[in-house]
Amino acid sequence: MKKFLILVLGCFFLTSCTIEKEQNYAVVAGLSQPMVKQVKLAVVGDIMVHDYQYNEAYDAATDSYNFMHNFQDVKKYFDGYDLVLGNLELTFGGKEKGYSSFPCFNTPDEFLDAVKDANFDILTTANNHCMDTGKNGLIRTLDKLDEAGIAHMGTYRSAEERDKILYKEVNGITFAFLSYTYGTNGIAVPDAYLVNLIDDDDQMVADIKKAREQADVVVVMPHMGNEYETYPKEVFQDWADLMFLSGADIVFASHPHVLQPMEYRRVDHGDGVHDGFIIYSLGNFISSQTTPPRNASIVLHLTVEQVGNEPPNVKEVSFVPIWTQFRNAQDENHFVVRSVYEMVTLAKSEKDKLMRKKDQERLREVHEETASFLLNRDIPLSEIQEEYVFQKQ
Image 1 (cartoon, rainbow, N blue to C red):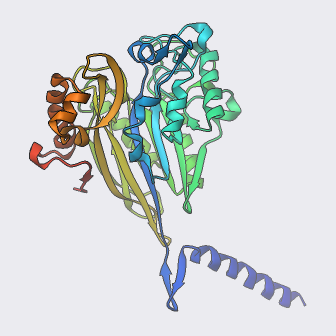
Image 2: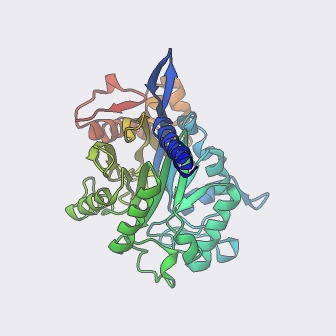
């Protein structure tokens, strides 16, 4: 009888293991074929609101704000993507604190309506402005994001919350999302759990390793780099290397407010060599920083693919060059994120209705600052495209 039970149990465990190993395979025409799983990400950089923006959005008749026009032209580049990510570089500290811009950002809650309407899924809140309205403002920001149904990571309301890693299972692939900032502009952080800091190497490494245990893909979104520099200093490259060595597959970085290079990375976390990816700075998605090149950026598109039981790979990377319009053709403040391609290829009569002459000239420069810079080759304006594929070197 004992031998029979042992035999049955052995068959059960063998079958269980076989099912687990073969869950990424399907039978096609009588043959076992590896299943192909794909997840598509759309990612943008710094989401900021300066006083120019909230003053333009203000309606004195209703004493309210309307930012809905900000993303209407660009949100189509999020359609069809499984997850949309960005860096929320502001706080929702509440009206009673008084709305403010640089150096301490406190943004009207109505801006979140535009963010939600654009279909953002995940926002990193760990950046140098996360403490701008103090501990209460940081917590209120998280509360407002929860109300909007937008996931977040990098800042927390409690030690227990900080220890919970953000996981998302999408199309059969499990992602972990982590974020950290180099600092908080000198503003004291009263409780360590409130903000993830990069210089706490031990904690960051432990977090990434912990995420690696449960996730197929680990995404880290650090806030690091020197403002307005187009190439990362060695110290920031070292930080990125540490993230990859600890278990990261993808790094989407921010802070410089301008674009920095991107590259594929070959990584191996014990599950086999596969393709990872890093961009050292995604630049500004929206802001009032109009000095070139701070109003030039991209919507980054990235596809993660897993074939059978192989580790997931970053399969394809592409980007849509964008530009934040500051003023309309009538020289009035009007903030809209626009596709560079769409604006450059408009008929002249349409351009004149939408844009100032100086902005039409600026767009030609933006093309150079984004497409040619990121692809590291000259792309004549005559060969402009709506979206560019970033080839693996």
